[in-house]
Image (cartoon, rainbow, N blue to C red; front, side):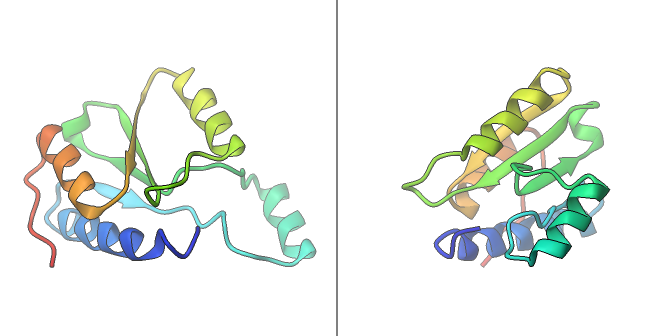
Length: 122
């Protein structure tokens, strides 16, 4: 994750955490992007870690069996090659919704449009 994205990522995580505590959804972040030594990278690859997994995976009854994948980006960057490949492979399974968020406001608008009761996050 790029440092420019980190403040947005943290605020979106706070929003999702509130909604999770309200019972609206369950979410997680798969920490694939951090620096690691070669031995740890080999171990994680052997366990199934995959490059390109999007930032947040969200599940909810409101999504009727669809899994929501959300990627947090700064305003001036696009998906990496591995992120595009991951999206392609998951879309082929026909059970996903993909959103790109540049701020907590983007996340709030998208979640509200999906029928969630979105709280205010300061």
